[in-house]
Amino acid sequence: MTDTIAARLEERGITLGPPPAAAGVYTATVTVGDLLFTSGQVAADAEHGLLARGLLGREVDVPTGVACARQCAINVVAQVAAALGSLDRVRRVVKLTVFVAGTPEFTEQPIVANGASELIVDIFGEIGVHARSAVGVAALPAGSPVEVEAVFRIEAAVA
Image (cartoon, rainbow, N blue to C red; front, side, top):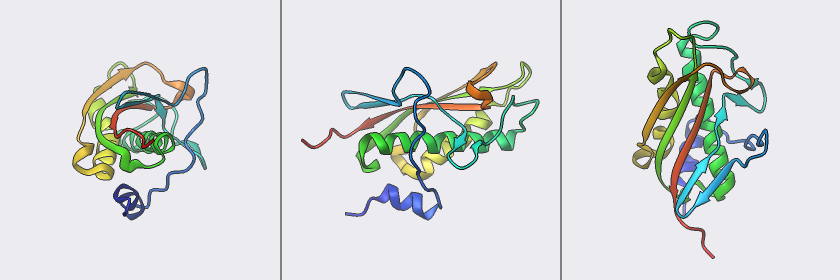
């Protein structure tokens, strides 16, 4: 059986490296029943670290914010893959919460959040269509301009 989600990742040139380690006293994912919750993922990759630092509307422009949201979503998917062993166990992407660090005047959080939403829908297809919140905040860990957390409905593990 072909892992169609893995094939979509490969077609798009997306490689899921090892997921980022938890940076404190928490776990990267928690499963309750058929729901998997991810901890917030910042806009970093293993090779380069944070893609950008600072606030939208000051140090970071909207296209860079969109790219950061996309990287956060890749990190979310990496966490899910590590937790489940196979992304084919995902039955539905339920919700994304996208936190966008910006100046008080910055109001384009939904545009930035589209970077994460579009990546998730592109990878998961119809089951990737989700509810979403795009929330403006004053600051995020390590100066990341974006952080994303998610909720997935999953298939139970085979015993």
